[in-house]
Length: 69
Image (cartoon, rainbow, N blue to C red; front, side, top):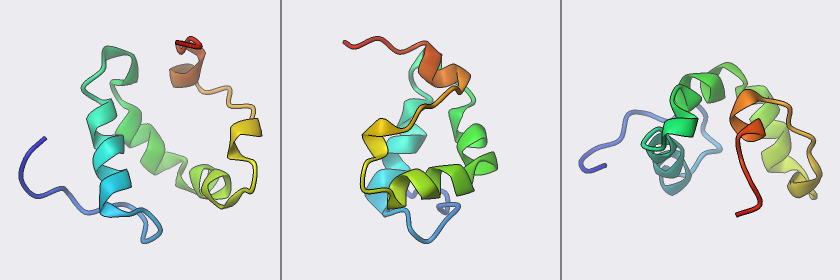
């Protein structure tokens, strides 16, 4: 993704983080993720602020497709 990024949906997202989120859509398993992220922004903010984000039990369809690899 080159050029200027669309505005981030939240001030707590760095430009780098927002760019990485946008690039997820390049992977077929994450088509539609950007809209999902925007709709669930408060949930992702809670995870972002957490001292243990790796312990979140995420039941979203995007995460159910992931493998340990």
